[in-house]
Amino acid sequence: MSDPHEVISAFLDDEPFDPNQLAQALAEPDGRALLIDLLALRHVIQPGKEAGSFSRSRSRQGLRALMAAAALVVALLGGYVVGQRSTDSVQSGAPPATRVVDAPAAWQALP
Image (tube, rainbow, N blue to C red; front, side, top):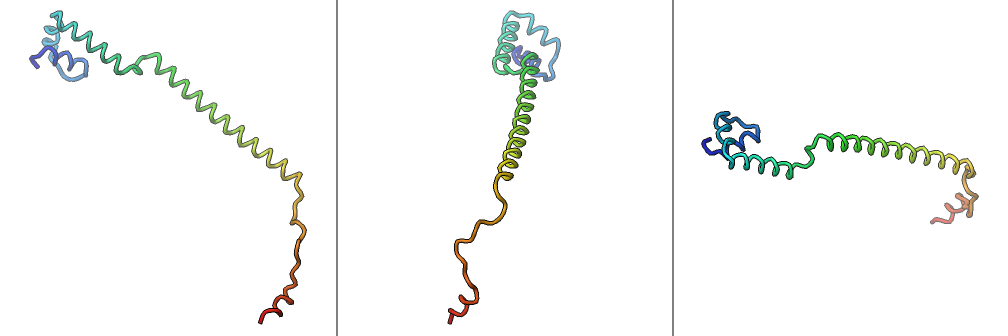
């Protein structure tokens, strides 16, 4: 890695590098400017890596899951209660017959 750009890139990517070469690369103004540019680019590309946003989004996800579970429980209990009330008010049993068929007479009519 003789190129200062490669040394700085390896440093940022957690790859093996020679500390002396990194010191030489950062001793030059172009090397420091490259380091700043690469850090800014990394920040733009990975905006979710901020320390505060991770904990906030994690707590929001937990709150959303808890609210969804609570809504599901309320819906299930409400449906159960409404179903119990509607079955109590409806008469249980079969409706009255609209047509009565005499089976032996129907069998005699067949050839």
